[in-house]
Image (cartoon, rainbow, N blue to C red; front, side):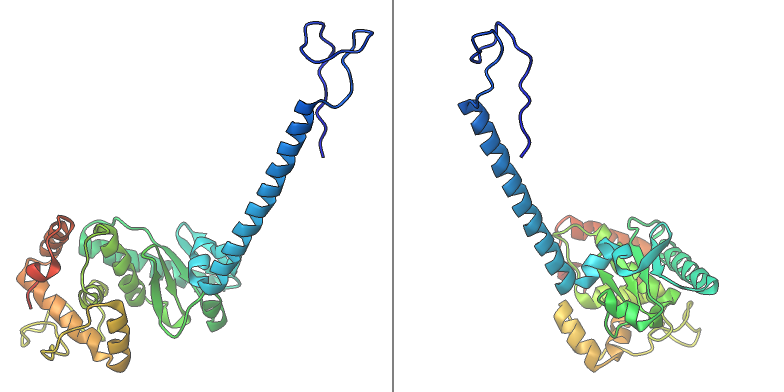
Length: 278
């Protein structure tokens, strides 16, 4: 325990003094109280650090993707350029490929919206062990809390990267109170990414009325994330149907201008169901 070093003797001091005029060296109630106060502060500080360490460790174990996006270096990722973190040990060619994918994906999102409000960090893994370590699963890529994007070895592609970045960009433009159904969010991401698995290339073929590869079935599309995950895992054509709906809606509402107007009205409090009728 640190000691309080007494100040030099002062004839005008309030503290008791010895008979020779020097300050008394005995412990005073005030001094003992100060020591006890410091002791309790140290105990509280140690306890607080322990609680925080336990909480952080729990988050890292339960939600590694959240922890990895917060501290990529803690999970074996290196910052290749601002906003781009890649698995350690990549070859020069692999690092260059990661740069190209990040740049091309960013251009697709900017090209669609005109500007970008979001700047998500990209976490890129080229081995499955790396992707599992940061919390990934069987998906090619995933947006994490609308702030970061994780790409698996199967997702190092401008289409996959821009699809996930589209989710982040859309939610960066929506207020917390505004909401869109999951089918619209996913369908829009397909359009932004220009994904040839679910839409024909732009522009639509002259012989076709639109870019749809799979027409909507007439059944309601998934609204919540839980419904989407269940439907899309059972029927991959769910992506194509949703993309078709969104593509047709954009064609009928001025493309980018119509989408930006929709976002403005959603942010003003108008419900999606009254603005988008399919």
